[in-house]
Image 1 (cartoon, rainbow, N blue to C red):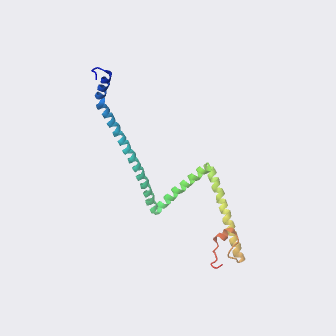
Image 2: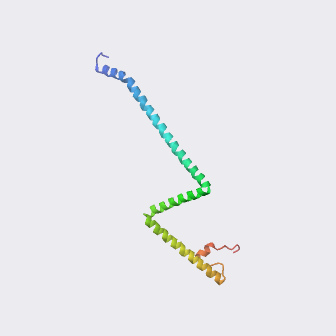
Image 3: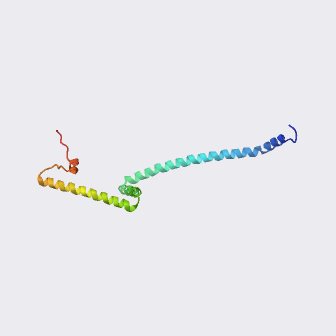
Length: 140
C-alpha cells in the first residue's frame, strides 16, 4: 500500500479506533447479558410472589376468621364480576332482586305443595320441585 493513500488512511483510522470499537462491543454485550439476567430475575420474582400469595391465602383460610375473610373477598369479587357483566351497579342489583324473588316464589310453591300433601295424607307430591327431592324407590 502506498504511504498517504486513501485505503491506507482508512485502515490506519480503523486500527486506531479498534480499542474503542472493542470497548463498545464489550459494553453492549455486557448490557445485553445484564438485561437478560434482569428479565429472568423478574420472572422468578413474579412466580415466587404468586406462590407466596397462594400460600398466604391458604394460611389465612386455615384459621376460622381467615375463612370468613377469604369468603368476604370472594363475595366481593363475585359482586364486581356481576356488576361488570350486567353493565352497571344498579342493573346488577335489579337482576339479583329478580332472581331472589324467583327463588322465593319457588320455595313458597314447594312449601305450599308440601303442606297440602301432608294435609291430604300423601308423602310424595306431583310438584316438580318436590319430585326432584323425593326419594327414589328401591324396587321397580
